[in-house]
Amino acid sequence: MPVLPARSAWLDKISWFQFLSVGLDSLIHMFDTGVMERMISRARRIAQENAGLLADMVEVAEATPKAEFAGFEISCALTLTRRAADVQLELAQTVVRRLPALHAAMAAGDVDLAKARVIADGVCTLDLATARAVVETILPVAPGLTTGELGPRLAKLVIQADPDAAAKRHRVRVRGRRVELQKGEDSCATLLGINLPAEGALAASNRLTALARAMKQAGDPRSMDQLRADTFLNLLQGNTCSHHSYPTAHVPGSKRRRSDSGVGKGPSDNSGLGNCTCSGGGSGNDGFGGGAGGGTGPCGGTGSGGGTGSGGGTGSCGGTGSGGSGGGTGSGGGSGNDGFGGGAGGGTGSGGGTGSGGGDGAGSGPSSGDGGGTGSGVGGDMGRGGDHCCGCAGGSRQRGGVELTGDLEMLARLNDQPGHLNGFGPVIADIARQVAAQQRRSPWTFTIRDSATGEIFTGATRRRPTAAMARHVRARDRTCRAPGCRRPAIYADLDHTIAYEHGGLTVVGNLGPLCRYHHRAKHEGWWHLVQVRPGVFVWRSPLGRRYVVHPSAP
Image (cartoon, rainbow, N blue to C red; front, side):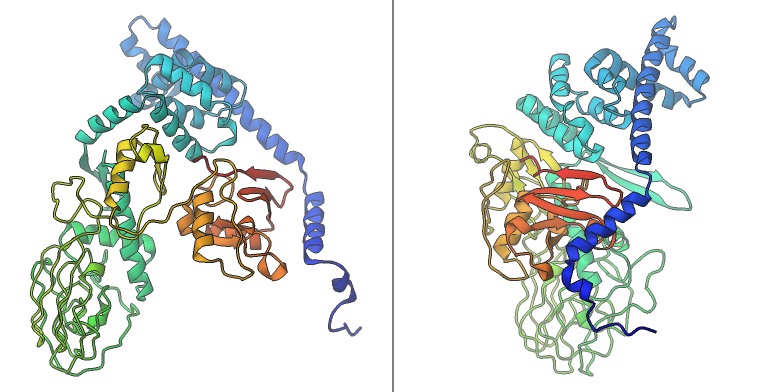
């Protein structure tokens, strides 16, 4: 058996990048690349056939003696439900008669049925001339966009076409806001908030994510989706107990931090927080606020763990647990702000102090601990909360900040061009200005962007990017840089395009946000990525296809 040297000679002569390139080329040669072309060709033919099908539906409808029953004719011929036939016919009439340029693009195989539906729905509120003008603008870029990318791009064009009309439509739609309960399968249901103001819905969604992440980091075994859903239901039911999950009230074996060490027992006071019957066994540190001196049941109930809290803190329920008579050393109230919207006040350890609640609390209740401090549930982090219960513009800022892109002229009310809320999409100028006004007491970070290339920026020679670099790259790219991915950059990894260990520099021209899935695809899935200039990325798939990703439109 031959003895291999400690370091193979060939490895000294061939760089890692050359080795990767050779491996990719070998893989591509083993693959019949004609399959990719056939797949693309079939997709184009399907789009062309769908264009013909829509034209046939319109012809059938126009030949029907009474238009009201045209859908009935189509439903019988194609074995569709009456509702499905009506929906298909409405789309056909819109595409073929109202938007002939869109129908021509389908007939050429450039736009498939799904994209045609997005475009038709996106311009349905516009008058005929404006709708056709917007369609003519979007069609040249539509073939290279996913439906997820096409929707926001189209929404921006619709707002730009007539800002005043867009603002009026927004007001009309918000007046129709409502909540609907839809029955599901297997004894489940879907609860929908419909026609909610975008900024409020986005703030609520971000708040759910922040609370879920705090519980996850504290060791909760539930998935992020489960935590968001459970938190959503608990908040609406007035139950702030983090342990209340579904279908069981407690998750066996959940990992919790146990940092309290006292032996005294302290009663808790859940006033203003809803009803909770959990008791015993936990520690004040289970609360999201992290205060360790609270009541010692899992929900701030009576138990044996009162003790060394660094503040009264909330129990797992955000309850105002006391510091306990076991000698807690609390130095101030816990942070109700981090409980379930919590302003139940910071209960105090025997060190006393006053907690400053801070969340959109369900009331403020005095703690019953030895320190006798009080908590105040004032302020708020849910966008329009706080003292302005009517939801007026005086509401408080969103917790964790927002990312708003827009013209300075728009913020100064010199024009009504749309803004862009990262994580949601284009919004009318009034909403963008309102969101900016809600952040007026917050620290601001701004980036002056070039719409094509972004800001020129140089960074230090270090592995981890500076905070300024990270802000710049996320402002420049806004979403994951994989083709078609819309994961917001703030939730993505900052990837070195050329790996740091292979000589890549930590500069904005070598950094880009990648969501975890596409980050793994690059490193584990044999995808190759090059940043040809700051913000412009070229992907090469394992099967030899190349995809160019340009900077997001401002």
